[in-house]
Amino acid sequence: MMKIWTFIFLLALTGCAAEAKAELRVPAFTAYLDPDPEGASVSRGSGITAWQDPALKVLWFGEIKHSGKLECSLTLRLAASAETKLRLTVAGQSREASVKGAGEKLVRISFEPFDVTTPGYQRFTLESLNKAGEPFGDLEALILAGPATEEAHFNLEPRRNAASVHLVYPVPEQTKVEAFYCEVTALEEPLWSYYMACGWNRGYFGMQVNSPTERRIIFSVWDSGSKEMNRSNVDAENRATLVAKGEKVDAGDFGNEGTGGHSHLVYPWKTGEKQRFIVTAKAVDATHTIYSGYFFHPERKEWLLISSWRAPKAGGYLRGLYSFSEDFNGVNGHVRRKALYGNQWVRSTDGQWLELTTATFSHDSTGKADRLDRFMGVEDGQFFLAQGGFVPGFTKFGEKFARPATGKAPSDLMLPQLP
Image (tube, rainbow, N blue to C red):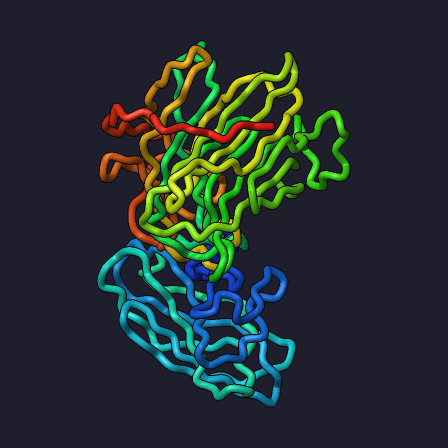
């Protein structure tokens, strides 16, 4: 009899554990804010705090793979004397609920269940119905339960960036590449996007959206073998040094991702307009190479030098050629980014141009499991990269694509002379 009761007790415990696991906890620090992505404080330690504007919405996104009933609640902190009223909208349905605070103790606010009829990505929109100046509550987590949560996929990590995505261009072995040319057309223009055209083993070159009023052309060269985050810790013998820079170009240091020399030109490049880039490599001696980045100015119809850097321990040629698209801030990682990358060419040391018509897709660690909305393909005869937007489907890591050849090598390369 004792064994039977023990078995029943264990079954009960197992059932309780299974019921507890049926809840999916989506941290508040994974949410986005709309329309102002910096309209409240979002942090791993505190969740969402300082939410005070009734016009500011809190957004979560997740893939719901099964239709059915979806139960939603929130955990939050609210002063003991306060009450908050909130509206949650999911799958076109809105529910309202209110809760009174308990000081530092978490309270839970539950909404009437939702019915999810179509599997796919869902947007969870939270609004405050309180007036400005009244406490809305500090959000800790969105809690989901019910049949619709089975196999649901959400990013549960504090990094809210969309995945960084890359094109890797194979070059025939033994080719000594002294120039790499690529064209980029941005199709979407969210803030804090970097569309990088010409990347190689020692640097990168492309265009960036820095603020609502400023865009840049950026060319950077890494120091030799640096694993430092602060360039002041890099010995002089390992530093890339500035040789020359173009008119109105700012040049200096960069860190936090390795270290090196950074340069940028503030220029209002246009979304939907093709931009042209070329990087060149010139061996100085057995151990030093000068890397130069040139940008074609669309209005002036001429090539501009962004900057040239003398890089130690470089090896003489351009290797590991690639392009990428990056969401470098993270506060608006729910917004879709997309750009076309086309007409890639390399010039060998014997002066021959070779067109690069194949590329392989890759992504950063965020794209491995946290954010699956990352893509590569061929569109209008060019490669494209896209990430963000919480749209269905994805491109597999390592998938290869080929674009049609243009046969049009850059023929107007009247590049400025270096000093």
